[in-house]
Image (cartoon, rainbow, N blue to C red; front, side, top):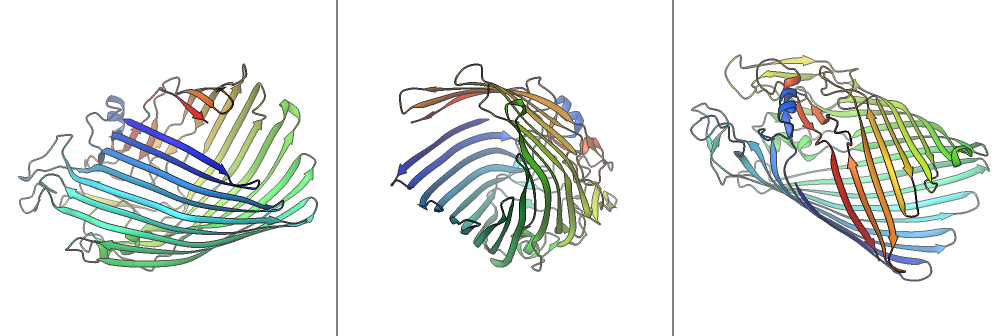
Length: 524
C-alpha cells in the first residue's frame, strides 16, 4: 500500500467584507487488494489474503479536488457565497479472477485475472447561497448545479473460459467488453425561512427541487442500446422548531424528507445487456425517505461546562429498489428486474456529551441505540451450490421473506468516548474508545458477527515559527491493543459451492491490527 498526498489553500482578502479562497487536495494511491477473504477459517489463517483471490486487485488511484469560494458580507444581516468545485477520480484495477483457461483447465494462479479496468469519474458544479435576516425573519436562497460523468473501459487481459464445458466459448485477450459513459446533470434550487413568533420559539421551513438528468452512451460496436436517457423531477422539504424551556435547555424537533434516484443500470439493465437475465424497468421511481426527530439539548455549568444532547429519531425509507427474483440471486433461468418493492425503518436514540475542549482536561461522548429493520422485503434468493454450472442439480435456490429482519452490518449499539489532556501549551493528548455491539452479516440474519471494543491514542503538537508560519505535528496509534475483528462482513450465497451456507461462505475484511501514523502540516 502506497499513498501520497498534497493539500493546500490560498486565501485573498478582496476588501473589508469579501474574500476569495482557492483550495486543492491531490492524492495518489496504490493498493494490491482490499484484503478480502472467504470464510472465518481463512480469516484466521490468512487474514491479509496473501493466498486469496479478491474480485478486484491492483488498484492505482489518482484523486484530485479543487474548489474556489467567494464570500461577501453584503451587510450586517446578509451575505453571499459562491462555490465552484471539481472532483476527479481516475482508478485502474484488475477484476474477475480467471477460473478456467482457454483449454477449460482450472486456474489457481492468484495473479490470473480476466479484466483490466479503467474507470474515470468527474464531479463538478456550482453552488450559490444568499442569506439574510431581520428582527423576526431569516431567509436563505440557493442554487445547486452539477455536471457529473462516469466513464468505464474494460479490456480482457488473457484468454479464458467461463466454464470447463467444451461448448463454452473462449474469451480472447484484447477483447473490449465495456466502453461506456454515464452523464448525470442536476439542476436544483432551494430555500429556507426562519420565523421567531416568540422570544423562546423559532420555526424553520425549507424546500428543495431537483431536476436530475441521466444519459448513457455505449461505444461498443455491438452495443444493443448505444444511447439511453431518463430524467426525474423530485422535491424534498423540512419543517422544524426550537423552543427554549429554560436558561440552559432547548426542546427541538423536525420532520424532513429525502430521496435516492435509480441508477442507469437499474433502469435499463435489459437494454444494456439483453442476455444478462435482468429486464429493464424505466418506470422505476426514486426511493423516498421521511425522517422524524425530537430532542432536548442544553448546557450545564458542571464539569467546566457540559454540552449535552438527547434525541429520538425515526426514518422510514419507502419504494426501496429490490430485485423481484431475489437479491443476490445469480442462478440462471430466473427472470430478474428491479422494482420499488422494499422498505426500511431506522429508529433509535442518540446521546452526546461534550465539555469545553480548551480546558486542561476535556471529553466527548456519543452513544447510539439503533433498530434498523426491513419493513418490506418479501423475496430473497439464497443460492446453494454453483449457479454458473449448467448441470442439473448443481445448484438450488432457497427463498426467504426478510420482512421484519434486521438490516445487515448495522450494530444495535455504539459508544464512542474520547478523553483529552493539554499538559502544556500547544500539546494535546487524546485517548479514544470505540465500542460496537454484534450485527448480522446477511439479510437472512443467520450469521452473527460479535461486537468489539478498540482503543486509539492520538497526540498533536502545535508550534509557531515566526508571525506567519504555524506547524502542527501529529501521531496516531489505531487499535492499540491489536484487537482482532472484521472491518466488513458480508454473506449472500454459498460461495464455496458445497450446497451449504454458513460462516465459511462470508466475505470478510480483517482489520490490519495495530497501526502507527505520523506526520506534520504547515500553514503560512
